[in-house]
Image 1 (cartoon, rainbow, N blue to C red):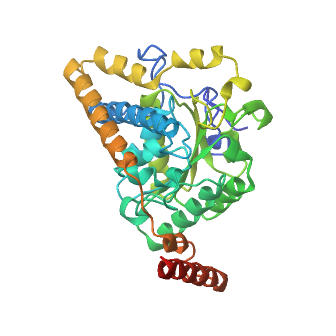
Image 2: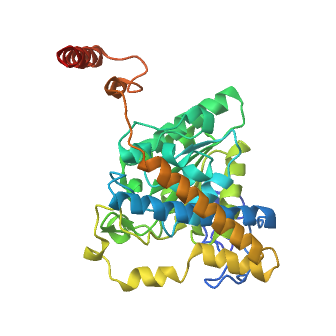
Length: 375
């Protein structure tokens, strides 16, 4: 008979070893004190935690600025990640520079954390370009609006990196709603069968637009979706930055070491509406966001670092100043009117343009030339 440990995993490396923890892994209490008992994952060091704190402060200010720009008509749409900063920042800091990130449309803070210019990160949401940054330069795939298609791309790229022997990992972000899509399951199955070095990071923020989690799955948690495919899975408190960094670091190392894919479910919450076009008050009570505000990831990490003497008033002020500087640069860039060339619409759609696309390009070119002659 297989011996199962208290955390739900078999001690002999059998099927039970794939199971996530019975409760989400956490290092911090809601108030930012050290949680007990200690988790089984190595804790990140103070330098990485200070870096995460700074990135979360900057990310939240960027998120607020982007939300304000939608109200000024400078952005067509913006999906806020306010409250999910630990996941956004943790996904980036867990990767090496050569690893790949496959974001959803909600990962703008992750893109900025990765070093992408804010204006380039927002080009898609402004409607200026299919992708405003160079994916190869930053090792960040274009932000994905179709649900879960990025997970298939991540699995394929991870497998290619494995075949080339590069040691690189691909991390795919996906929301709880995306786990109901067929692409998600195809990606997990492919990655598991071929032991692709991929990490699937599910940010379970309780709602797929207005659809609550209980209408998405009857499983004990979304992490159990990995077990059926033979994928090592884990649950983590997504508002605990220390735990997110610890678990994602272990997941990336698991994949990089040739052990196949890893699935992480982060239990978190989006405090704002799905996008600026959504009204969250229609499907959730006002008390619900207030309960989650007490689990704020930035406040928890700040309290933890201050208690241990790893964060000073000067550090906090410097992070706030950096955040304001980035917000100002974002405003300036987005307040400038774009002047895209109409024919650029046809660029970067296909590697080799289809005959239909060439025909449409030629038609628009002729129309533009005719207008120029008339003027």
